Amino acid sequence: MYMKSKLFIFIVALGIQGVARAQVSSYDYIKAVCNKITTMDRDMTRRFGDTLVVRRVETGVLSQTTDGLGAYTTRTLYAGKTYLLYVFTDKRVPNLKMNVYAAAGSQWRLMKTVDDNESRNTAADNMYGDYELYALTPDTSLEYKVEIAAPAGNAAAARYGMIIWSKELGTGEASSGSGSGTSGTSGGNAGTTNPTTASGGTYFSTQKKNTCFWDAQQRQYRNCQEEDAATLFVLNANKSIFKHTTDQMTSTYYVQGTEYDNTNKLMKYNVVSDAGNKYMFMVTDDGSYLTIFCEKGNDSYIVKYTVRRRWTE
Amino acid sequence: MNRIFLFFTMIFTAGALHAQTAAVPNMMQTSIDKIKVSSDAGRIIERTFSDVIFRNDSTSSNCWFYHRMSSSNSYRINAFAPSEGVSAINVYVYYKDDNNKWQMSASNSNTGNDVSVRFSPPVTRYYAIVVKGTLRTNINNALFNLIIERE
Image (cartoon, rainbow over all chains, first blue to last red; front, side, top):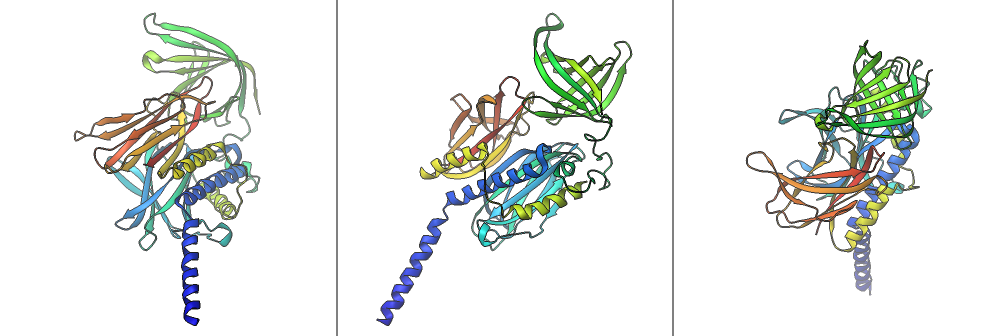
């Protein structure tokens, strides 16, 4: 009887283990990773508002490497933004590290290893292992590699998640409601003061836009389309960033150079967008028009906005 | 500034790890729904990506994804984006030949904002999967998703 009981308990224990394994399926892990991404993004957006924008979300499998488990991804990150890199693992990997590399010709140059061992693998949150965070402000627009590595001794494989947010320089803390107004005033990086909220910004509300396309044969801009365009341009006090808000989105353009056109009485701003595209913004002295010129050879076009009102704050 | 940003973020992240899921963004929910269907069908989700299609970004620089695929498997590559932002999406699979030039191995034959490619790699290697999308008028950028699954 005693032997039968032990055998019974042994079989029950095996069964429980089997059930426990079955309960955490591959789908469970990836669903947990997706849910974590959703939760993190929701909470970060709640905290930082529109200043934080998702640029890349990724999930994948950490697979065996010579040093343990690993995976990597690459993405172009642009100068003039701060990127927040967030990587995490499921509970099968309780300790990970993040290596960040910058492209250097055909090689990768290690910039930073982040291994802060910040795991909060508690019972209430037990699908997740470790995570690491790194804020990066590129000096130049480059391709970067983010490597997720876990030492040997972990499971044979595990899932990871990653989010890359971008953030306009100096705006996040201001919108968070904390930090006692210290946004952008410390840290020592030149040019990172809070440009978009500093006093003296110039606002251009627009009412119409007229888009014309270059006709290579006629050698003039034709095929113009005029439409209503209730949008807002904001040029910060330092005259280093334009923000353009439409009913769909807000785009950011970084001023790389200016030139005054005395003949046409307008200021030209050479800008680059957050996508890396180059444009010229032209603002007439009287503030009645703001024109965007995109030089793309035979595909060049201009967008001329009629300004409803210009003001400064 | 960088340090302050990271500092606040880290404090918040510690709390967020205990946060409960509330409203799930459509993007991830759509992925989860698709992954559920795939898992039920016995397919293995190897990787998922979400990134941004920008207007006037002819190089699609953020839409190149590198993934190692084995010649002993076949893969299903699914790209999709919300219809309110993207009218059409295309997926291409490239590899680099011996002359270091990109060669296309496969692309989608169907059309729309939710397309798939079935791909059986002839050689085990890293492949580049490139997503290109057509944004609707007045849309300057849109998130899209990419799911790579093994059949």
